[in-house]
Amino acid sequence: MAYEIPVTQARAELAELINRVVYGGERVVVTRHGKPLVALVSAADLERLEAAASQAAAGEPAEAEEIISTVSRLGNGATGAGWSEPERYGLTAEHRDPGAG
Image (tube, rainbow, N blue to C red; front, top):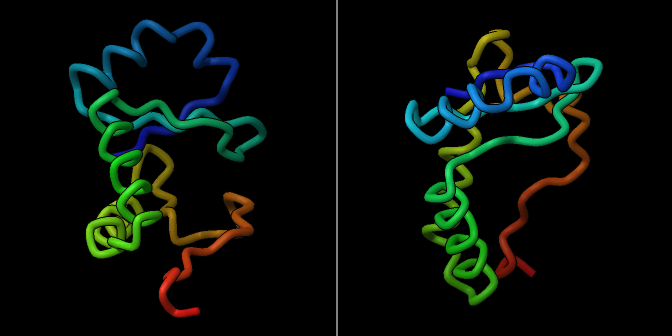
């Protein structure tokens, strides 16, 4: 589950947010004016994301696709808004299979 918090509040609660991520297994999205700026994820999540990116770059997209699918399902957090709302998050990129040429 992703928890959204405004950057001004995140500054005051950074230690608590770190604990939520490390010990609670949560992902935290820090927002400014309702738009996401950064996400706090555990070091283990970061390693998995980096490994998936390396596999995708090496032409092994199967596991990367699974992770992208998992990340796409995240987002029904505190605001109830999902990641399926690209206009809300200002997303301008999309995933394309490198082998589709």
